[in-house]
Amino acid sequence: MTVYLNDHLAGATAGARLAERLAGHHGASPDAAAALTSLAAEVRDDRARLRRLMGELGVPVHRSMVFAAKVGERLGRLKPNGRLVRTSEARNVIELEAMLLGVQGKAALWRALAALPAIAENGAAAELRMLLTRAERQADVLERLRAAAATRALTDTQS
Image (tube, rainbow, N blue to C red; front, top):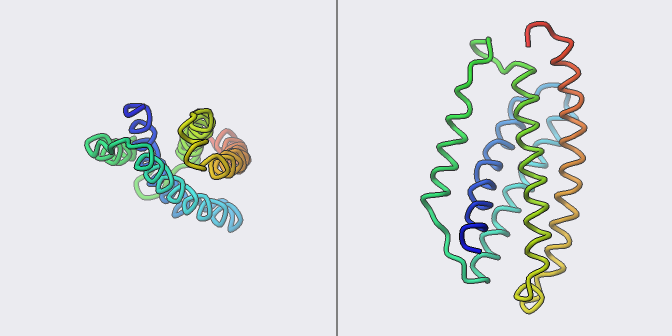
């Protein structure tokens, strides 16, 4: 369980940073920016809840994995996109797809944790149901944004 939860914590760390960056530079529309800003706040909250659950389950945080996730997320920004200053639409699609995959993984985490007897014993089942519902809604939002960005990218010969 230690490795599994720390892997998800590392993913949540990278996901929170990616969500914040997406919210800051996704200029497709004010609605998209607002949705991503809200999503970034929820992802930070989800990460904090995961850390708390890890503590309740007696699972230690491996700080080296969290640090590696931060470094990996930053290195992921270095991919050239053919533009010097701004983000390309193709880059938005890739980042939205990465975020969507992360949120789908997070939903799988909440499902796995909900099946543990220790969760029922500490009363976290209701919280996990709420987190799962939120992850499913986040995935729906990300898929809508990803589909729109993909359409723009695939019709833009510069992307």
